[in-house]
Image (cartoon, rainbow, N blue to C red):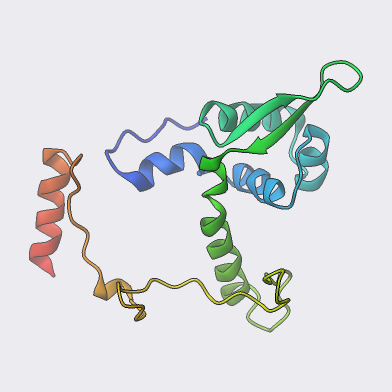
Length: 162
């Protein structure tokens, strides 16, 4: 297992939790409605020991909660917490990126629709306060209230170059 990122950065810290491809496949399955160890194993192809490790870490990090469902001995279900549910937008962005850049020939494996209308959802896009589309060039990254001296220096150096 890789050493955890210690940088005072939301991206680095998020990667400590979900920076592994097996973890994202487990999260994907949870969004599809999977909750049982055997279903995660079958649907992802992950080895039992890796799955047990990833699920334990996801529970420890507050992404999943583990519930004893008491069927025939000790059996557990894994459910996304509110923190886990909030990964949905990230997962949808990954699906849309994959459809655009891995399956550009129109043979996308997944289409995400709105249940009520049956229509495909709009592309996720960054927008301004008034709804106008934004590119990365329209954005600035500023130190937040919890930024340390190193982060403030680094961001000031970046803003000086732009």
